[in-house]
Amino acid sequence: MNAHSPAPPAPPIGLLVELTHRCPLGCPYCSNPLALERPGAELDGETWKRVFSEAAALGALHVHLSGGEPTARRDIVDLTRHASESGLYTNLITSGIGVGEKLTNDLADAGLDHAQLSFQGADKETNDRLGHYKGSWEKKRAFAASVIKAGLPLTINAVIHRANLHQVPAFIDLAVELGARRLEVAHTQYYGWALLNRAALMPPRKEVEESIALVEAARLRLKGELVIDMVIPDYYARYPKPCAGGWGRVAINVSPSGKALPCHAAESIPGLEFWSVRDHSLAEIWHSNPAFNAFRGTDWMREPCRSCERREIDWGGCRCQALALTGDARNADPACHKSPDHARIVATALAESESGDSGALRFRSYKTEKAEA
Ligand code: SF4
Ligand code: FES
Image (tube, rainbow, N blue to C red; front, side, top):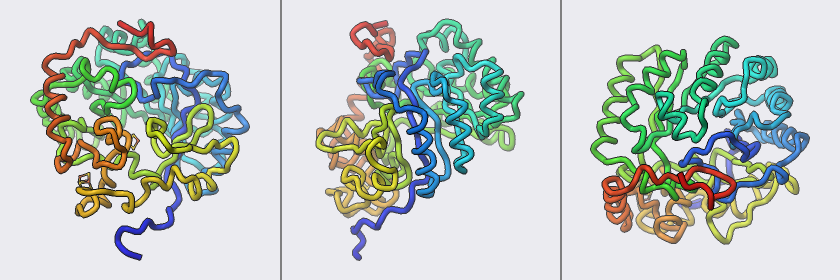
């Protein structure tokens, strides 16, 4: 076997399930596709339970219960219990809206291991405006308190962009105040809704660099109290991220209607057929769906990736971003400085960060034509 041959895939480590695309919030950087799946298309509870059992049998270690808002599913406690009893570490990724203390306690009793709560801003006005939901600030804080009271570990997730970049220090204070063990400062990744709103969201490079320095100082100051993870913005990076840990390497996403995907944006790539968990087991999909094999390993790569020393570190970056920004998913992710498209996308980002209008956000909605703010 030469260095470029794809090895047979090891088992996936994790499963990310979008249980529903329903969500009370309207974040303008939502990672869900622009064409949201309708509630009537969602998998039933028994099928989700089978998927959890299959994931555990395949060797997966954890499941992220996500959405939309996963607690919009009436059977969320039942699903959590089954995932936990299947042996999966269960993480709830939630807006915190509609999750009262009783539901939090029921989820904890059902075996939930961890809760990840999003904040759109670090104060009431910013949070409610960017989440497009008045009163969400109080609901989120109440949910955080109920998680701590139930004895569950809490992570605060803050997606960062031009409208809230100045609040990075306040997000850190908020996470400490709420008793979180971990804070994720995630600069926006530009897919789907975020790509649609890119001109309004793109932050200036200098302020991004200042925010990175702030986080590094806070990490030292809060060592032992709060872990801070940071996702830096692709367009200002030197190298791309190993998107999804590498295509078909460590994770499976499942959409509300049951399509199994190597990453959340995979359906944006034309010509790939994604199998449904309704018709195939997860093991069949992982091993045999041609779409999972399309960008596995390094055989598919062109230059500059093919001969690059980082090809098995970042796996060429993100296929979906390569498609969106260069027109071909086989190209190097243009976040990489070796990509011939890198200078162009950095120039675009810089121009947008200076001239984009932060007031022109389009909030996530089933009705995109009415989503103008
Ligand atoms: Fe990664 Fe390709 Fe850039 Fe090398 S050339 S660092 S493999 S994206
Ligand atoms: Fe699809 Fe990065 S989002 S590979």
